[in-house]
Length: 245
Image 1: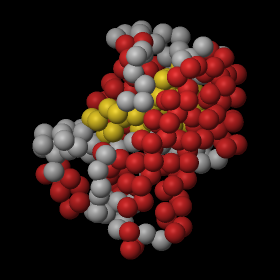
Image 2: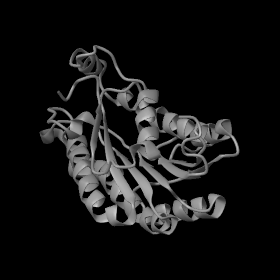
Image 3: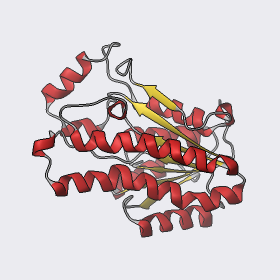
Image 4: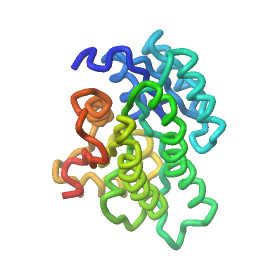
């Protein structure tokens, strides 16, 4: 698939490490110019520098409308438009419902859910101008089933699924496709906030008996960003080693 998105412009949030960094690297390796965004400034700049002149980094609070306006303006100013958006940024807290304080719920809502709304809304105009585009929202296996220790995160990830389907219906007329990926347990720093026993239990719950790798999610992102998926919109792509079966 080398060069399959040659000349396209992509925005990837949460791209300083883990899944987001893998996604940004693979999109760039296949011909895209990539705007990486994150609050982890030093790490994000390092990834963009490592990718080379086809990438740039923007410090970005994904829950801020003003932040999204800056990202869009930067992408257009530097690369001429936006063709691909990967709403990847997320945070997690291992808390049950009764232990989830309102301020914690609101923080996760703003980063995991509101950011997806803001990102999709922000790229509609440049994607219309380009004659179409691909929006890829990263949900989670937690968006396909219930969990007993990730109440706020689970609620956010179910919402991402619903927003994806509604946006796909609204934006199809503009040749803007909107799809959703549901990663399972992926070996990234987001797992560091979980107790070790929880991560061990998660691996035991995976039929394939291993964690996924960030590059395996990046391959799905590349497929959905490319013409190879030109008739896919509003679709659910579970990449979870069989957890959601």
